Picture 1 (tube, rainbow, N blue to C red):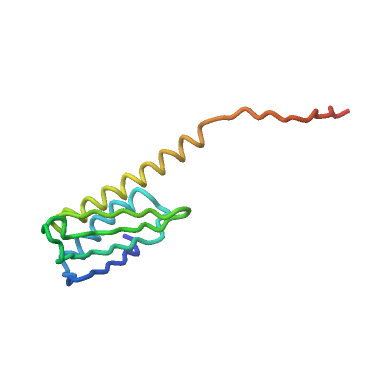
Picture 2: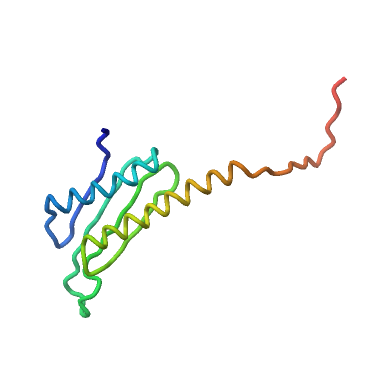
Length: 121
């Protein structure tokens, strides 16, 4: 099994082994879908200054792939739920990218050349 490059950082919180393992397990799902992922960055944040005490845990993810990078974030009361939501958003982005590549490859376009082409003799 190939070890994938997943960078995990935490703001205002300590990253435990359980959190790191869960992020790695969820990231494996993304690496199975797409072979061209260079690396994944995950930023987990605890915001204690929320006045309403809602959506205190924020997880932000960045997938570095060939072409444009994919960014997603999710905020909930539960850290594990926010990680789950963020991974689902990134998964949808990868699936959409794959689907659009297939559609683009299958559509044909008529080519109209405005100049007269001379015949070979």
